[in-house]
Image (cartoon, rainbow, N blue to C red; front, side, top):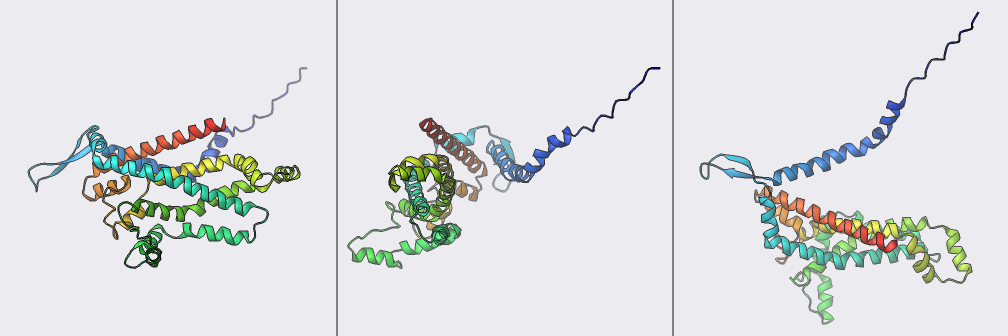
Amino acid sequence: MPVTTTAPPAPARRRPRRALAPYAFLAPFLVPFVLFTLVPVGYAFWQSLHRTERTGGTFGKTRTVFAGFDQYARVLQADYFTESLLRVLGFALVQIPVMLLLSLVLALLLDSAVARAKKFFRLVYFVPYGIPGVVAALMWAFLYDPRLSPVVDLLRKAGADVDLLGPDVILWSIANVVTWTYTGYNMLIIYAALQAVPSDIEEAARVDGASGWTIALRIKIPIIRPALVLTGVFSIIGTFQLFTEPQVFRAVSTSVTSTYTPNIAAYSLASGDSYSEAAALSVVLALVTFALSFAFLRFTSRRQG
């Protein structure tokens, strides 16, 4: 008599649940990113393609009509856009290298074997970043004001009569505020990367007679190159978002106009009910920032290769 065997029941399929697991972990990031980044950007792009028209005279009704890329043409042809963009580009070419160099030097000093009180100095360097941007700008505006500043008085007594709020210097006065604020933040990123450098490599270099300067240049800096690139990208993005410091300085100096930077120009347009043009300017600025950040990444990757 043949013996029949029954196959064991197939295990329940868990693949669909496992496939959803990564999205569940990503949801705390993806949901706010979609709601507060992608949706506003999409709405700004939609608004940039439309304009508001008033019918029936001054007191008539308003309607929104499709305008295509007319707002983009107006932005690209406007003098304020070219001037503000070139101003920010010049700001970035000077301020970003200076700030990152200071951050790198401070991080290397903290990471050196002879450094003392590392926790204290890490906190001291990071404190400026913890101060709200408006408060920091107001503090520096006081130090720049020739009527109130003790710093300006000392410079005058030393024979240097410089108007730190004048049209020729104001941009670099703002750069000083930004450098003071963000140097400590970038220093912490670089310092964290230095902590991941294997200690045996440094010990082997010291056994071979390498000095601390040689170890920093030939070993540490090449290893932490990704962290330097990351801080560079963050700095490029932050520079093209420059708003708080010049906006505060507008209250104390006539050198800062309503179109001093692209972000301030967009804010001024929106304040004047030119929402479509402000949206177009914001989209163009986002594209310029993306293009420059991408070019910087490509340039650094080629140098590394």
